[in-house]
Image (cartoon, rainbow, N blue to C red; front, side):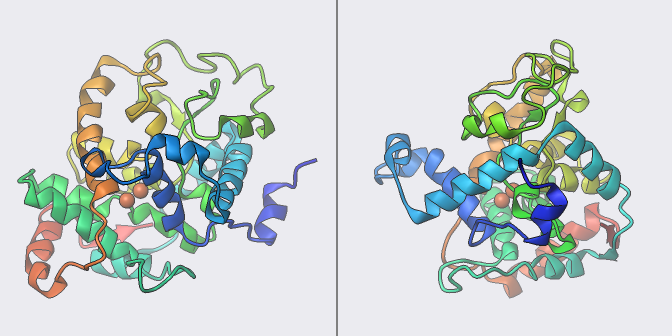
Length: 296
Ligand SMILES: [Fe+2]
Ligand SMILES: [Fe+2]
């Protein structure tokens, strides 16, 4: 018998040493094609065993076991009311940065540095300013951890619930633990959906992507919103496992998701950007698109 989510939360089961461990794992699965000379190829990933890999496996076991259709609906009902907190945008970045973990402080940059490196990489390549802002905001949803959500309900590859789980999702074997796995409403190819119904009608596993999408829904262009909402949906944007649920419009918009992904994955650099130089640009950018206060 599996422990209930409440029982789990009482023991605060967070297998990863930090959220970055998940991102490092994604990077090993999808290495930068431009620096593929390193030994972190996909093959190496599959054969690779390490204590860190064990924590990732444990993390996905929890994620796949508990991210059920009902779980997603209950988290949406709770968080999409945005009645938790309200604060100025720049305070929100500071709030996010309270998310410190026991990772090595010498090698891991804080959350804001990752956001800034992503947005700066986008800016360097001359993309439109709303995309730069999208880069700066894309992981803001990780504040869910500060509201007491476990790692497996905040990060991890996202995937549709309410229909059969694809074996293209990382560690598919753990879906056997999900209450939805044997539920006839949810375990067929289309489940509660219809062919090519469009992703807006599909429920994805709950986490920082869906949360930040709703947070920013009124402020960014649709292409930016796709980047926010689907940036961890690797089984689609890398593996194309859910074409049967995508509309023609989704396919068009996923060009933007694909454009965004390398900036998220491959912009990490041990040298932090020079914030005092960059500050005026970003203050103006935030002012241009966002309201004074953000709601959580
Ligand atoms: Fe993310
Ligand atoms: Fe990110």
